[in-house]
Length: 124
Length: 423
Figure 1 (cartoon, rainbow over the protein chains, first blue to last red):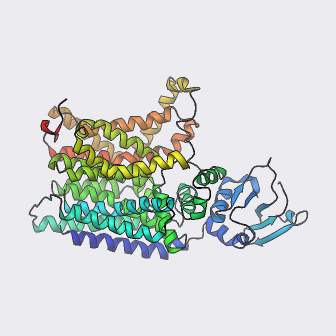
Figure 2 (tube, helix red, strand yellow):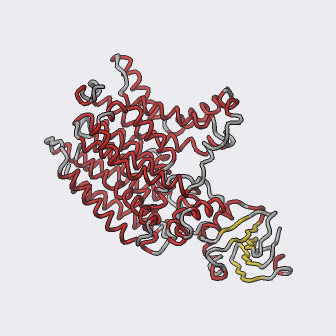
Figure 3 (cartoon, one colour):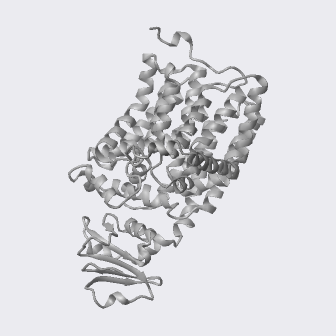
């Protein structure tokens, strides 16, 4: 077996994979992609060292991890007993209860969620 | 060692060089361009040292063997890539994005690393309750290099890294075995690995477990070649592969030291030890720096001694571990189980003993299962979420070691008596 042919096979395989991944998997619209779009504007209101509270329906762990991933390097906590001056809230689109009692710094909606960055400690 | 195997080894090794050198440059606060220059230098040195200077087998191949080999390699590549793409999602498995790639984001931030230096890393990861922040940084620093280089967090790079490691496993087994027996080589690489949906799933998941599988297999391949040829350069290469093993995940540390312990007699000679340390040294030192200064303590070995005796003497825990293990083998690896059974019968009939490294792999498996025994987590949850990975770590190496012994059909290559120092 000639090494150069082996290498050529492998490189062709990798190029084929790049082509397919770029044209299919990268266009996936999963949960993280959804969050990426929904939370796009919030980073301009937060600094790199920010540490904020995260509130979502049913304390969904997957949501907080997805939000952390998207909002890196901001640190998101979800400890109810701690006091934070800023909270990020993600609620189902049908729930608009947060609009009233809070100082809203930033908000956004998409087809699934309402996103709020608010200025005082809040709990569900 | 075969030239083709060196070519296959050099692909994941290049990623290992990138991962290690990027980490060094991050600590030293050097620009990403330094990693490119250093990696290219290391790669060229590697190619020269091993492709030009190493003793290579020159076996005259007939046209039939050549044609079948090319067809097999094309088939292996096509099946892996095609099936992986069917299973692939943009961000990979849960652990890939929230653990390895989230860490990679930390590694792209020079200021997060250098403000008051590294404790920031541990503090931030712990603050964000990131699982296993104590794990070796291997995959994360490799991903971070590409992200930093392109100023993006494009998921193509983690995917390509996983793919390179995944295709290297069956290809390495194939290139090592095809001249001895092409049917066996094809059966192992295609039948046991590439057509196994479970294997393909791991590629698409983009996890570091595929690094462990590869480096463990590669360590055995290099070591067996060393035993056959006594070429000291292969000891250096073995050391490099063991370095890759410890740089991948915590489990790699256990496997690398178990491997050295099982072959300690061979490393007693000063030159052998020196060659091994040349390969293993840098990743080992860097890992000590990482674990000693930056990473938080791992939960497994810092759980305290309370309840340890109860865990070790609990029959239910043994039964649960065995049940999960048996279920895993019977569900995903039936062909591998049959191959192992055949190997056992073969040994009994011919009145032979397995080679030393088979015992090493057996010990590693028992060690892995033993860790479950003392796990501080809920055992049911811990096994059910990780048994598939630990089996996957060992499976390619197990299969290779079995087929290597079957194809050798002679006694185990030994270190010569003259190689061992007299005390």
